[in-house]
Picture 1 (cartoon, rainbow, N blue to C red):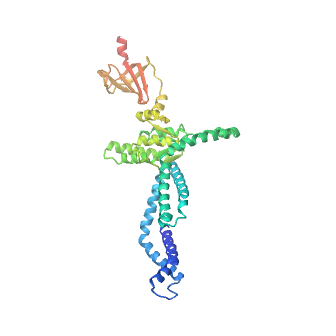
Picture 2 (cartoon, one colour; picture 1 turned 120 degrees about the vertical axis):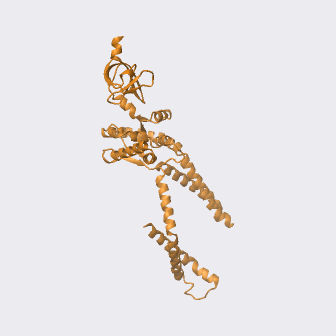
Picture 3 (tube, rainbow, N blue to C red; picture 1 turned 30 degrees about the vertical axis):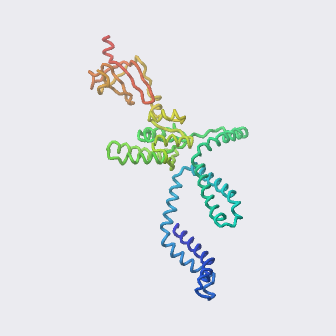
Amino acid sequence: MMKKVVHLFFIILGGTMGYLYLPAIVQLLNVSESSWLTSSILGMIVGAIIFFILSYLLVNYIVNFFRWVEDALVKIPAMDLFFGSIGLIVGLVIAYFVNMPFQDMSIRIFSQVLPLFIMIILGYLGFQVGFRRREEFMNILKPAKKDKRRSNDEEDTDSNVQYPRPKILDTSVIIDGRIADICQTNFLEGTIVIPQFVLGELQHIADSSDALKRNRGRRGLDILNRIQKELAVKVEIYEGDFEDIPEVDSKLIKLAKVIDGIVVTNDFNLNKVCDFQGVSVLNINDLANAVKPVVLPGEELHVQVIKDGKEHNQGVAYLDDGTMIVVEEGRDYIGKNIEVVITSVLQTSAGRMIFAKPKLLEKAL
């Protein structure tokens, strides 16, 4: 379809130029004084034929150029494109008023070339200002939006309803897999946003030569397919990218600020950076720790010591939910099921650790 449009455009352009200029060119060259050679209709036909033939030589290049422009525009975030366009329009309007004094000049370079140059420069500067300072403009508009909401609240009580903010998934929480079960239980409200750069990182991990990384990447892609196809949640793919930011975690924080979203992760370090920059974050590990059974010091548990601990003479055991239990003086009980007494519990965003001692030692003391 695009090729047909290009051919039609060249035919119309060639016919117009032939109609306007070909008779004058024939008269200027004194090729013939015949009236049919200087006819505008003949010029239109000849021009249309010439440009139609020329279109076959250029159509592929033109179509590829338009597709490249289309792909580039699609990848630009909507907010960036909006403010860039506003800046471009403002720049062109300013250029129009600046060029008005040059229209009456008799010098050709001032009346035609200089206005075009000014229009290009101011249009470019306007686009750059609107694109690069979009966040400042958004912050200026936010108070106006809040005031408008307050006035609407006085007239209509339905405006008190606050819509849930979008949830942005990072790579670690997708690979972890528990996010699918959380979505299935409807604990996450709002739209699930999956950035394109996160998908790219997942695909890169899935194509890794390392078998462990490859399996983790494929697991993450399977989790996304399950969330999108099997679960009753709204999933959106964010096509934009922040090319000036190399790290994926920094891109996630930037995206959360742009769309006023919440980052969903189980990365302890990303959690801390989000808190520092004032970005809302949901940590899956915090949720998992919150719903784990409460274990208090002094309680007794029946566990199996599996391996050595980091410190001297320690053993390590695990509960059914994966919580690690560090058993003091438990190295001699590796591979055995024993009764332990809880001595202390350490809980952080990185997980929960339980410290215990064998019950037999407690009795001996």
